Length: 442
Image (cartoon, rainbow, N blue to C red):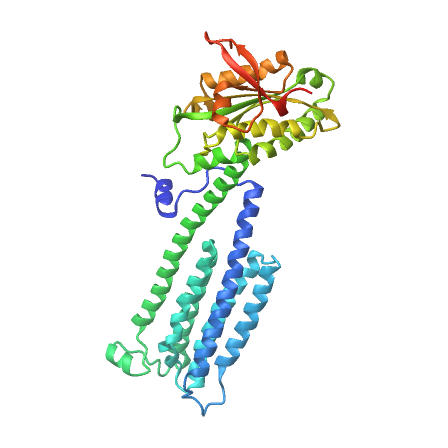
């Protein structure tokens, strides 16, 4: 195992590629939210400290110097200013680093002042329980997924406590008050060097553990955000229902995964599109198709259809495949009739009419392709019949044709008109074909 493998094991694997700008912006927005959360937590801490100080009995009433209220006031003002900067999205790294140092600096100054307030030698403050707040301030920085601020907080705390310890030792060179007796240390103002070193080591270790944990979390966060943005972008190339099915699957979808079920397919095609396309520039053609697909997709979504495939200007729409739909045949007919009612001009005033073929039967919905490249679609002989029915519209001068299976599955309430029996290419037996009154050519 080389150094890179060890680093990946300890800190987690980094991203294999450069983060796109839109991903960086998404992460930056989450970091701003984290900094706002930190600001509110700090205000809550200040309020808690203030309440505890107000309720606690004052054993130093004879001392004129009371630093705690001033420290709390300064910290409150500083926290409010930083919270305001966070809401205004103006928190450069340098300012955040300085603020972390100031957080810890104010705490250390408060601890240092205890020996003055209580009129005791400097060693007195080394035993102040307020020292435990150091770990709260370090942990607070873990709310933001950036280990730099945790390291800065821990380094400032360790350096500050080292300074406080050295101040005690050298404040009075004639009496450094150092002892090696643990009982004397606990029952007097003497200094036990080992105990203070243990505190510094504890600060360093807590900082290290939190920094490693947050670094691992940061890498996971960046990977998750990158994957989320990529999934959101890719979902624009497949229907929302198919994207949800892929992402919610218990295991990765493999080629051939699918299920056979009774469903309905609707095949659409634009009448005379090749002739229309010849008269348009590429830009006009793209603009027209985008406008057309946008309008038609609204009708498809309204009736629960799922676009499983685009073929130029044609679409293959499935019902009761990706999402359950007991009324799939009727909804397919509603979709086809709804498409006929969509406005007829698109883009720069191009007139488009849509032909639809609908068939119901047992078909397979699933993944087709290779292990590295898949498409989720429906396939089977029933799909081919829908495509053939769409083509027969031209022969019968209609815009909606349905098979007998669809007619029977749709139920009552439709004005079907028999076209006759047609031998569809690829089938030996003739297929009964119908149009729907509202879909017949006027």
